Amino acid sequence: MELKKLIRACIKRDRAAQKELYNKYSPMLFAVIKRYIKNDYDAEDILIDTFMKIYENIGKFKNEGSFEAWIRKIAIRESLMFLRRNKVFKLFIEADNLIIPDKINIVDELQLEDLLKALDLLPIGYRTVFNLYVIEGYKHKEIAEKLNISINTSKSQLRLAKERMQKLIKEQNIVNTG
Image 1 (cartoon, one colour):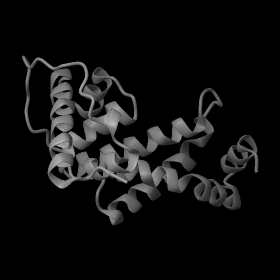
Image 2 (cartoon, helix red, strand yellow; image 1 turned 90 degrees about the vertical axis):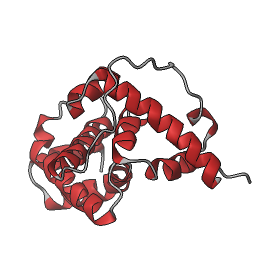
Image 3 (spheres, helix red, strand yellow; image 1 turned 135 degrees about the horizontal axis):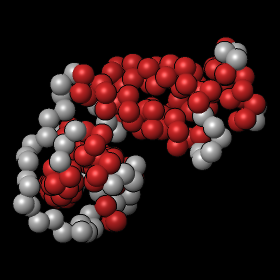
Image 4 (cartoon, helix red, strand yellow; image 1 turned 180 degrees about the vertical axis):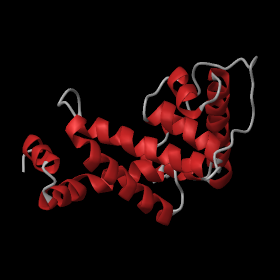
């Protein structure tokens, strides 16, 4: 079914349309959620919560911009709310006067699967900021607002995440050589 028709049917609470929407987008959204949440069971719960939010709010989607981007934001928001609710999200330092270089090129040289392997090994604070900045494209100001942290903390978490990833890759030989 065409996306606009599928959305209209979901607005009318058509169960078949909701199932089709779920089948079409759940793999992508689950992958987004897994970048924030390691445990599969928790990630599956968040996926269900995400779809409940999508179904409840689908009438608010105005066909301005990408539907996929809209539902990704919902998945990210649900993941962050889970982390806050379960008090597992702790940042490791507050660095108000930290000087941070603009570029660390570790990401440029990794394939996506290698990046995700290394990312999964990071502490949750590093992983969350890294996901939001590098993968989702949020700015430090937006990250700070979403996570209720300072901009400098966001910047320092990103720098530390990149450094830790670089160290993990070297130590554990994560990068594919073939």
